[in-house]
Image 1 (cartoon, rainbow, N blue to C red):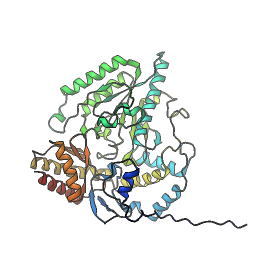
Image 2: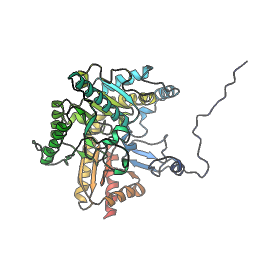
Image 3: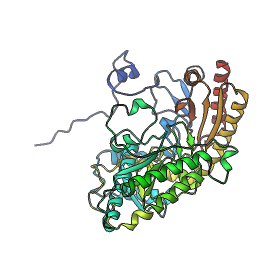
Length: 450
């Protein structure tokens, strides 16, 4: 008997006539949708197109900084790359259990382009929150084993962290996140030690050699927590730049001092680089700050989320990376994402995009400084590291209005940051004219607010 094979169409079905995708999604799916329907076949650099009417937007959001090459990069539209994507999208293997050439190629490319020799261990998973979560689990496991070897019958079960921090919204990370109260309100959480976050705006105080008074105070709070909880504290987790908290920059002098304290007390340090990775002018923000974390959580611009581990983690041979099934998940990240990430990393390497992004970041920050001088009654504190740039509004209501005016009247997209700041997250490929156009739109927006 001859088998009959039915032919299926792979075309995405169009919404019913008169049904707007934004309206339809808002009725069914939780989210904070902008009134834009992305045209996946169009777009160029920082230009994003609405498929409904062809409107082009100048995009300084990059899908919350998760599109490192912008829209429509030619390197992601080659027949070879598209064929590779189709090939791996036909099946979704459980990556922790079944090897593929694609995963091996991704791991090798990751290590070559953005890897850190002192952090040779890799763990992949979907979601930045789960990346942080598993970094904490590695630390809990490590600290408990270190304690046991010293005859201390205490589990490593606490995480020291900073105020104004955002590390995710599930499980352990809820106990660390303390930005917008609505994101954690009424959920059960652990009472873990929280340290003041002495962020400093780049400027004269930034270059002070000694610790600033607020940094001394924060360090004293950290020391007090370490004395109080002793062997219970497994790790200290920090964002090199606190993004969700308001693009708050922490000085290397402070973070290095906490790092020394953690080494002294056998506490691992965890850099949460989910947002800062491939954004601040180099692969990782902590590198420019002279820090040496034991664990780094990554995601967003890397396409695949996960954890890099090493340094003191390697002091325990049966650490959680190496003990079978100690940390794992069914998928271990998406193989399709790994293929895309491999190509993106190759393009970053081929086009020297970290160096390019540093130059574009300097241009953007210089323009924001000019804006702050031009509109001192509206905005202040222009700041940035690489392409992670922001300004603050003196009136939070003006920030909300500015985002709307820029989008609706000038077709330019920015993001909020913290209670009163506006952030820009251009792609690594941003061109000078795109940066200048975005600043021009913001200038017109601010002029209308006056």
